[in-house]
Length: 170
Image (cartoon, rainbow, N blue to C red):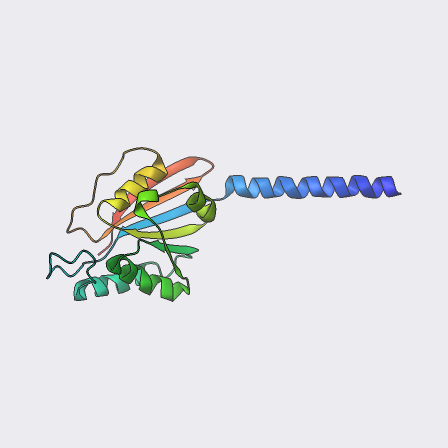
């Protein structure tokens, strides 16, 4: 009897680990990457400006855009304009904003923490396309024009590979 129980236990453990492997293999990871909303440009010497009124309005519009999307995490660089862009969406999802260093994008820790999840990343005109390129492992996208605050990069990673697209969200 003990032999049968041991065999049954081993079979159950084996089946369970195989199903977890299949879940991991079929899990889809989705990244939404945006540039911060319109910033206050009244003081050119200010390296960390806040959003201007149009930017605050756009940040709220981003929250509405993501309203029906189940986000697991919101990442942002540690600048006023990116934090202020991310805040309405993060608040609406009851998520804390996770800071990331734009010079250390898509590292193994980020990949592990976001694998199989849906993640919003808020960056800058140069870091957002660089982040996308890093995820795709190719130089597909150029820097965003300094007046473009409406581009949304969407990357999907699943067992079939990686896909990307850009949408304009006004």
